Amino acid sequence: MSIMDQAARRLEELKRAGFDVFNGAPPRPGMPPTSVTASSIEGRAAAAAEASGLFRNRNAVPEAAAPAAFAPAPQPSRRSREVYIDLNRLEQEGYLVPSQARSQLAEEMRIIKRPLLANARGESAQPIERPNLILVASAMPGEGKTFFAMNLAMSIAMEVDHSVLLVDADVLRPSALTRLGLEQTRGLMDVLHFESLDLGDVLLRTNVPKLSLLPAGTANAKSSELLGSAAMESLLAELAAKYSDRIVVFDAPPIIPTTETRVLASRVGQVVMVVEAEHTTHAQISQAYSALEHCPVVLSVLNKFRGKGAVTGYGYFYGA
Image: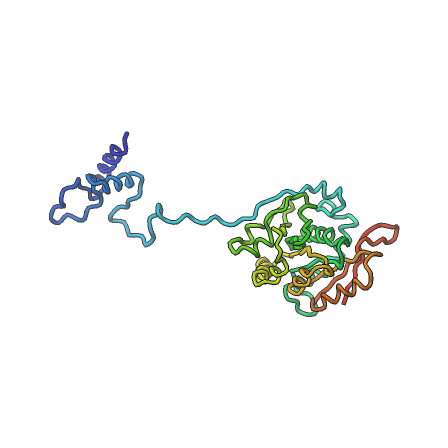
């Protein structure tokens, strides 16, 4: 059946339903305004539209909004995409995974994370601004800060009352995603550089239920300026306040050879400085601490520490 035949048939149905329809002749005196004109081009289009259900009964209450057919399409909600971490491979490479809940590494991370989580919950003696933002750094490269940051994030993801976002903030030499077996993609630098990008556009959900990732993003020559920008301040405020149970762990660049970490450290609530045992010099540690003197909380972790039985692990202490 052609569209015109369908329209004619529909017009007959409209008449029987109480609609006012005429075939192009002038309306008789007293006749209400015409709803559809079948003999005109406009009327034919309208009749075809009516056949699709776009017209309403003249006795219906008018709607304030435009017809649904002409309403703008709703914007899709920005939802982070999911990635898969090979936990078996990660475990073989010596990282903490949820199945290792009673391992020595898991116990060491519990000892280290407890004061950090207590501060994040507001249990410190002095109020801390943005206590759920934790920056992990080291004085020099190669001291194990990324290894520690990944283990800390995984340990927090094993908590009952907290979720964690691991941010690859080592924007000069990002490696956290690569170590997790994932490809580098848009992330922190892109959100700061492009106003059209939202945090939800670049966040990655993982197969570890309470662990999310924020990649470093595209390399940018103005990385230090971007980390010190108003856009970064706004992003940190959002990260600190949006989810009350979320801990954000930043894997930051080494302190001495870069300026990025000094900028970030002044804007987070807690800092963990990873020190390589029997390697980092006293002078390097002193210089790194001087760069962190305005941070309210600095927890130092001795990495690659050989304790009793020559077992490599973590030691921990507070630094001034």
